Structure formats: C-alpha cells, structure tokens
Image (cartoon, rainbow, N blue to C red):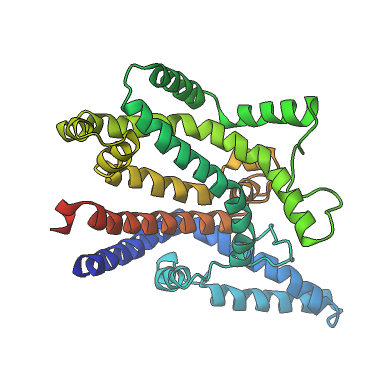
Length: 346
C-alpha cells in the first residue's frame, strides 16, 4: 500500500510538471496568446451584435466594443505577460476546465471542449474496444502457440502475416474493405455510424450501429493483430524454452495448462504493458480509419481540429487529455507490476 501511495504522489507531481512545461512552451512561443485572442474575438463578435441593437452611433459603438475588449483582455490575462497566467491556466487544466472550442461544436450545439470530448469518446470506444478485444484474445492465443512450435507451419505463417500486416497501411486496408464489402458485394455500409434516415427504436438503432461498425473494426483488427501476435511470440519464446516448462510436460500436464500457467504467467509483466498501452492508444482513436469511415470519434475530432480552420484550443486540450491518459496507464502498469512480479513486491 505504501508503494502504491508513493506512486500516486510521484505521478501527480509529474503531471503537474508536465502541465507547467506545456504552458511554458505555449506561452513562450505566443501560442497561448493566439488561442486566448481567438476566444476574445469570438466573444467580441457576439458583444458587438448585442450592442449594435442599442447603440446607433458608430463611434460610440466602437468605444463600447473597445471597452468590452479591455475587460476581456483583463479577464483572460492578455494585458499581462504570459508567465503570470501559469498558475491560473495550470489550475484550470487540473480541474478539467478545458475551455471552449473556437470552430467545432458538439452534436447538441455546445462549444465546451469537455462536452465535445465526452460526446465523441463513447463513439471511439464502440469501434476500438471490440477491435482491441479481438487482437488481445487471438494475439495471446496464437502468439503463445507459435512460441511453443518454433519453426512450425503456424510459426512461419505468423511471421509472414505479421510482416505483411505491419507493412500495409491502415488507410489502404480501409479502402480495400470499402471496395470489396461496400461496393462489389454491397453487403455492408461504407461509412457513417447510422443509416440516413436512422432507424426508429432502440434495437433497430443498435443493429444499424453494429452493422456500420463492422468494417472499421475489421480494418483495425487486420492491421493490428499481426504485429501483436508476433510481439507475444517474442515475449514468450524464451519462457517456453525454460527447463520448468519441459519439466511440466514431463509431468504430463496438458498443453493448455502449460501455455497459460507456465508460459504466460512468467511473461505477464511485459504482456500487460503491451495490453494497457494498446488500450490507451485506442482512446485517441485511429485518425485515418475514423476519417475514412466518417466515424465521429476522437480520431475524427483530432482530424477536424487540425484541418480547415485549425481549432488550436481544442488541439491543446486533446493533447493534454492524451498525456493524462498515458500517465494514468503508467500508474496502472506500476500497480499491476507490484501484483504480478514478486521481485517488485519485495
């Protein structure tokens, strides 16, 4: 328990220093000023429209708008050097006050970054978690099997498939899936999350969503499963050749028990690292895959924030969120290592 508490404290301190480093970089380069100025200008446009309804004199209107601008500059700290905003901006991020997006909106019309992210995150999970589950299950099973049959037919096929899967880009697999299953065979939808118009009823909507998710999930799984199976093989091949594995076979234990208890358990720490970091990577979404299939998830959100008129504030907020997710995953891994590795428990 003491080790876990120390880990929590160390990661909180590291996260605060990470935020300070990001704020210093953004402030010293003028990037934070640009973001805040865009927020001020967006609010001034609304203020000007409201004031124009009561102030008819153009000169008086400009004076009123200028006064409003000075108030907003003071509110956001633009009338002071950037480093004076460090404590306030860092505290806002820690309390998850991520500000407002400049150009993008949520489906309900909100421009709050937290609303936009919370709306897109479940969509990414719908696509990424099934793919992650398939990759984990088949990757562990086939990877360990190949490690116990080095040089066999399955091992050679796995090596060929892993190299091919790793060499083929995700966008190419996605386009090929669209052509084959969506155009030639015409059995699956080629994009979007729902049909137009969407079906009525919860069950019909769920089935329609599941049908639209098949191609994105299949594309991501085909791209990821080969390298992951080969990585599991590499992690377990030395363990599979240890004397205690041969001793377990000599005692007549079944191959399934040997694979899961005598090979996978000793290799659990590096395997858990690969699984947890892969799961965290799924939260960011596959930018190209979500864009090709018009899947409204985190990856598509990142693409929309960068393309066209860039939404700098949203890009920064997403970067901070991904950094926080990565640090949380590292903490989870440290806790898992304490449980899985007796040497760490000591």
